Image: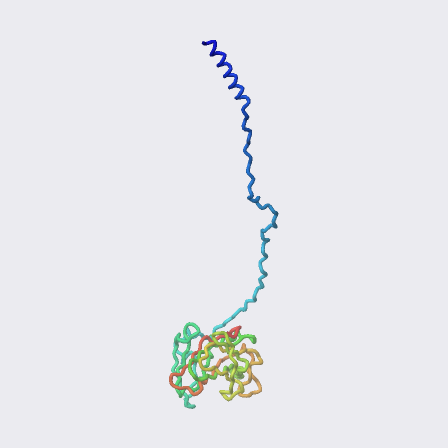
Length: 269
């Protein structure tokens, strides 16, 4: 029996080996599947780095030196009757006004407030002390101004004449040459008169509700002989007195005006 089975098992083993050798081998290899995804854009582009921007050229604006030489700022004054020396005009029926020093309408610090009545239609202020006159004499130039801050909150005009004298020769400053500048920087049109009777265009009109600066030029052309005399005051270094003839037109109770910072200045405001 063993001899019968042995040949049969040998034949089966040979057949299994033959089958294993002849069986096809799977040779399929995985390949990459192409996709439609576009490649990164590698198109060369211009260099987008901006060149340094040149700063705009700056033109220097000339600085205007505003020189101010203070004659009277009213901050240290204690008695206006002494400090401003208003002339006694009682022979003309004109009384001294009430004068106070306060900050209400001042440009800065204290100012002189002149309170009016119908009997106060003229004030002639006189500055002749050595200390204040020396400020003018040492600093006044023909290209400068005699400047003052003025406020007129009343509904009447105020007429002001600036008078310069050396004791023998006297001049008023031509009001047509005056520069009247309000606090907004607007230059007003001049209105002038002969309020004193001593020279045409001698008085500048300060209109109602005006607040700003009055600048009288100190050049020779602006200086006019007082009273029509042949010779005028013109040598600024020999000054002995500054007078301000101030005339409120038909003042009533409660009317007032304010003066502050009388000075020699290089600019009109």
